[in-house]
Amino acid sequence: MKKRKFTFLTFSFYAFLLLIAASWYFVIGVKNASFLELFSKENVAYASKFFKGLFGVGQEEIAFLNRDSWSYAFTLTIETLQMSIMAIGFSTIVMFLTVIPAARNVADGTLTLSRKWYRWVVFGLIRISYIFSRAIPELVWAMIIIFIFKPGILPGAIALALHNFGILGKLCAEVIEDTDSRPIRNLASAGAGRAQILMYGVLPTVLPQFLTYILYRWEVIMRTTIVVGFVGAGGLGQEFKLSMSFFHYTEITLLLICYLILVIIADFISEKSRFFVK
Image (cartoon, rainbow, N blue to C red):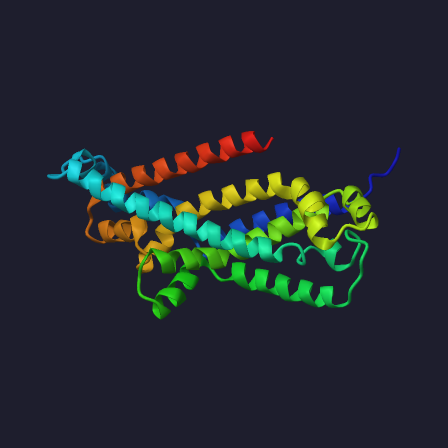
């Protein structure tokens, strides 16, 4: 009989199981956490009151049945949509300006058949900026930006763009690194310049994947506006915080419905865009 090799994949699987077991032991054995306490009479009563309030049970004014509330929520929805579009627009522009030198196969010259020492310096600086950008959460960026500027949807959009620029840059740079280099190298060997290689070799190959990532991050940004709204960035997020603070449960339901509509719109646009690209 052949002996089974202890591969890295097998080691990872057993290490993952060990990590799960150790985590549960720490939670239950060391911290003495009891899940039954989550279902105490007090917690059940609070949860029942909250969910009944969301559906308007026992409420005098039901926001999602009020015309004026819908009109105000629609205005906030437009603000949230504007914030998300500005955020993904800012981050996409900066990503396109930096993504080519941020690819490893461009830095080492394997893609363009041209090796320059300074490309590694540019590569390192841009990659560090990507790490710094995505390492700081959107809420922290929003607190910094709003502290410098006045509250509003523009500071919120800048905060969201600062965080997502690093994520988009890393994802799209990896797309360039994984692309088939043969057509691009043929262009380079035929005497094409860097701009021609970019326009006729790189972009047609990577643009569909770029578009997928951009639309996905736009949908994420649309949901994350609720977080930056907590610190005064405006839109649905700021109103959501106020509704939670004043226990206006039906307003929370109305705002969640508006967020659901926005995500459905983003998903619809994403599906149609991928269809036209193909």
